[in-house]
Image 1 (cartoon, helix red, strand yellow):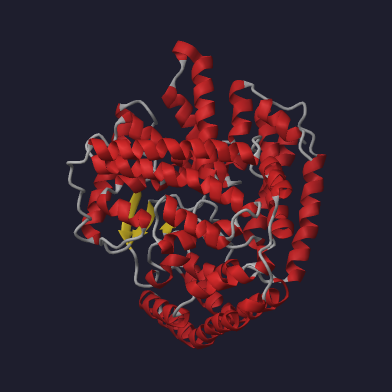
Image 2 (cartoon, helix red, strand yellow; image 1 turned 120 degrees about the vertical axis):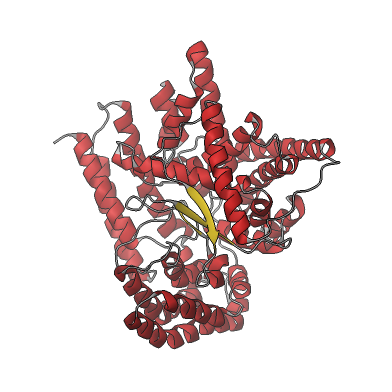
Length: 542
């Protein structure tokens, strides 16, 4: 039996296990298809069982010798090693499952949120899962309180309290609305499960209000552990300080570029927000056609007819009460490659940061979230099975952020001065996220410091800043992924251009990057350019 066969078999077993046992994520890119009846477990006993199984997987992984195999096989071996390292990072290092009241709230209601994302109709398995998840909420609340009573962090408990305003009523509104889309048997079961679930969520908030002040201090991951994450999970060779310095340079550049754009277009009126959801949806559909045509006309990225579309849609009444608890889009999965859907609120001048941008020019969402929709779909068709999974957000978010700048530079927004300003502001935000991420994980910033930093320096509304920071506290490395990943992509593209000379084909390189968008760029450098410099740094890490 070949090393490749052994590796693919182990990868298949691992990812099936991860889907069944992994935690819920509020982010969209790493979202996974789950087995029927899935609810996350976060008690100490189940975590201990997972740690034991992780060791078994790690031993099998180490026993597969790929040293004599072609570089693509060695890359795949390192990919699976990254996935194994991430499980250790989540269970043993971050330990959000016992410390973070926001994260635990996500484990309680996140499965409900996820089940609402796929557009209707609700098939039988999905209906059964809705009942199961709602029924499981009281026990999940009990488990979360037990964990927090022993290990909870006060600052995150206070953040959770703010997120849980009217949580019982929100749940009731969602259940009532979804009942209109299911059969009578499911409707009766949901109606019966609602009161105890509602009481449990309200009890969770009440417990936090009463006990938050007595919980522990912030748990700082620290520089040493963060470097371990960079080397073993994200597969990044840079030092934290280098990442921050690069981000600070990007921040200054973005500020100046934004000011220059504002000055250049001072006489231009700001475009109005869409008149209605329907108007915004229509504008987005037309905008997506324009972006796809732009890629082809400028020879930047292939757009095969078979590649699915990415479309806005009105937020369903059953999802709206929970819209702030995760990224409200349905990017599908390996088994569902239909049109990707992004749910939008009613347009207004009071929308949060990203919604406000898309309400004026939907292309501003297409050039980032639309990249995820295409990149994930293309990766699911990758002939190498291990490359069909998301390992770390750096390559995915980096590619999407790279695309924002690519589209601006190539002239997509030549007809939209205000949108040019916004893209520069996006760059400003992505750069600031690195500073926040590294300072949070090393203990320089508190949660409140990070929120204030976003509000003052982007600038950004308080609600979005609070929501983002809570997510980044639970997932160190996510906030930095946009800017750090973009730099990784820029470095690869520039070096490939120099190496290729007159024969360099940017479209061909982009096609490869989109199809392999789940693979850390340090590994793609090795595979494409024969450059092991980053890999050698990773190999030297403890």
